[in-house]
Length: 265
Image (cartoon, rainbow, N blue to C red; front, side, top):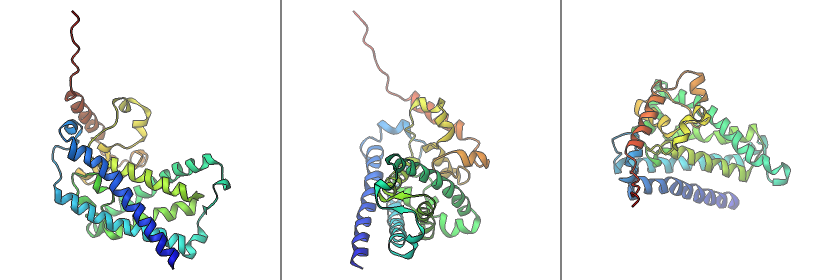
């Protein structure tokens, strides 16, 4: 029992620290310290209110608790016997550690897409997902702002991953950090992708902050988490996505500070 309590305290500290660090730093830069500078990066003209941020943090702490409980169930119950978690890094090549993180993101994106579409059915939306959509104009704090039942569904991805593919504990940690960081970017409320991104092959595959922001403002479409693949395959991508993205980038470019080059004497 002491081992379970010790692990609970450790995971709780890591989860809460990760949330406030990875969501708090971009929130501080974009919303508190340099809002005027980053105004041109803003996707929606409106701004969320302080009470929105407090609500999102409150629900995110509840979601974090559910994620911790799921992790403990995997580690300290017979469920672990059905997983492919390995303890020794030497059990697999070092490159596989990082490849497993990538595979985890691919699996998660598929899981999230279909779970997300299910949550948008009338009954499940009203009972659970509506909590997340209270954030019409999302912020970094929105990333884990879920109803408790949705948090359980979201957290079960960890079990799915460790049952499907071999994962080292460090790989699981890297996956959770990468997943949350990308999630924060998706809910940032600002588009920070570099100019070259629009005309690269990456734009055709990866989601952007504009992509998920449209989902929050329009409520339907753009159900994917990391990639555009499922939305494009299932024809659920918002038809105005590319046009909206281009408009946001054009506004950003038009408002960019002008560099004044002094005339030569």
